Length: 191
Image (cartoon, rainbow, N blue to C red; front, side):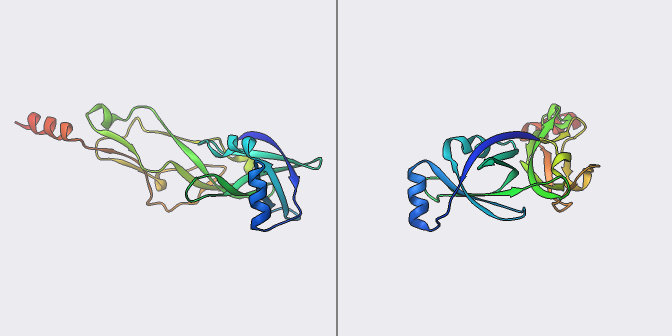
């Protein structure tokens, strides 16, 4: 997985008024949990955006008072109207503890059904996986070259050695839909 280094500072105060004043100063209130102790921190908004507004998943190395915490972003709260970041929860990771995190899906190749006039549709953009952080890839690459017209790739079709998928096996990842032009071409060939 990709890494991103951020600096953060410990915050002592809590509450709506304090958090509002922090956001006016371009700081985002955040928490680090999952380790020996939970920490309340604040992170620079501009630096944090590099990890939030991207399809990639990062291991975020937070430097707090000289100590480095390896974390992943577990949850982000957004303002309902302006979509500004209100709060972030970081989960501390280790080489001994498994984590569940959503990884982006990348479809590789051109589907056989798309060559026949169908339309390749990616239904799911991310899959939640469970494994050690060191074993997780940057993205889940799925080869769709053999996918025919009307066929689908489901979670049950995938298998990985170092991590497992934490989604139901019946979830459709990608499918090749038959288009009107492909139906018309099939009717013409039958005549």
